[in-house]
Figure 1 (spheres, helix red, strand yellow):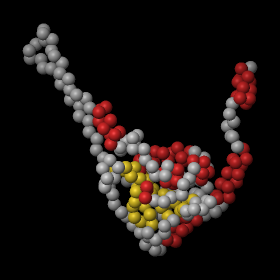
Figure 2 (tube, helix red, strand yellow; figure 1 turned 30 degrees about the horizontal axis):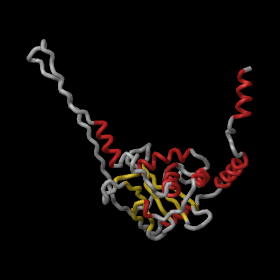
Figure 3 (cartoon, one colour; figure 1 turned 120 degrees about the horizontal axis):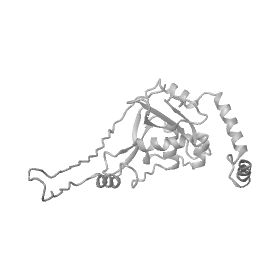
Figure 4 (cartoon, one colour; figure 1 turned 180 degrees about the horizontal axis):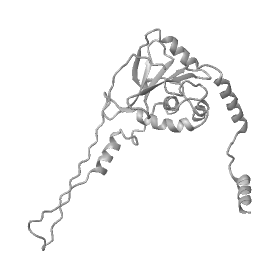
Amino acid sequence: NYIDITCALINAYGSRCVQDIHSGTEMATQMLQKCQTTNPVQLRLLELLETKLQWKKYDAQLLIFPELTEQELRNLCYGTYQIKQAKSYIREHLTQSPLVDNDIEFIIELCAQHNDLVRARCESRHCNNKNHIATVQFELYTESPISGWYCTCTSGWRDGGCCAHVAALLGHLGVRRANINENTHPLSAGHRFASIDDSMQFSEVEESDEDQDDNDNDNHVYTVAGNSTNSNYSTSDEEVVD
């Protein structure tokens, strides 16, 4: 039976679907325990609503944030699903700098009263003109520097894993160290000039045949390609917690 032979070869020489069975059991136990507890960052933000918090916008490269490895990020997210989604949120959050030409920024908001909180506004994919606020609580120079998170999206309250918005914030600040590849990002000057060169089509005039009527005009085709970006740079002191 070819199916039996194929399965035997896969079992003998193929890689296992689950590399570490014990870590999966430990992860499942942690998730079950956290399902029975309340998100501490959510409770803290609700308590802080009584005081008027001041949030100021900065470029993410100015923040001193704990460094994370890719494995540590996977442990916080309990897998790679949110990490894969987070990549697109990071790209969408990048904006053109209003101060420095050809510079790209990842805008974050820092709390003036509490220096262990950082947040970012991510545009919703399902609802126009709606932002989800992902907040991360961190502590520098500790063994477990990420102490919690909360997001205003539907699944952002859970701390047994996180949503894609929080994963985007953790990944860009902790793993990427707020570094942006300006050669490949669509907002970079080099990429934009290359796109313009590819999209520009110069009109070509075809000469008419000798036997064509004098009244027939040559066909001229003109193609105009345009590209413009617009970014707002403003500050807001509102705190939103659903």
